[in-house]
Amino acid sequence: MRFEHELRYDAPPEQVFAMLGDATFRERVCEAQHVSEATATVDGVDETMTVHVDQKRPSDGIPSFAKKFVGDQIHIVQHEEWSSPTDAALDVSIPGKPGHLKGSVALRPDGDGTVETVSGELRVHLPVVGGKIEKLIADLLGEALQAEQRVGKAWLSEN
Image (cartoon, rainbow, N blue to C red; front, side, top):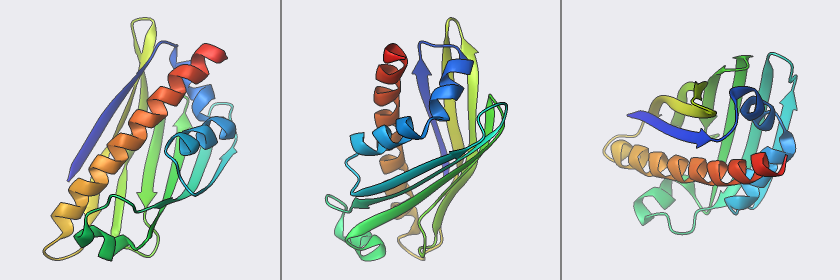
């Protein structure tokens, strides 16, 4: 399944890159998503960086067919390899489960602001229910990115 989501910020790409490279920002995004556990690490922040976010969230509200797949908690690991201040390779996985998103993050100028585009291929390798779980994961990822945008707009206005 193809996934794409755009986030818009009223700041230039350099400021958005700096925000995305701040572990405290990443932790605030996790808090806004009401995760039960989260750690965020960032290595490098000059022209390139590696971001790693490891989080666990309750699976409350997940349909029963999917809860059998994920259990009582959803463990999500997000890894970004930024090759420049505007482009990153993205890998989102659910450890121990046959699902992942492989794609990219791109920051592009948009007038006085920035558009962040998260895109990639979402795959769940399970017969019969794989497509349904892909859709569910896409919805959850979209909600997570909406939380990131809300926190990001507040972060950029404060800093």
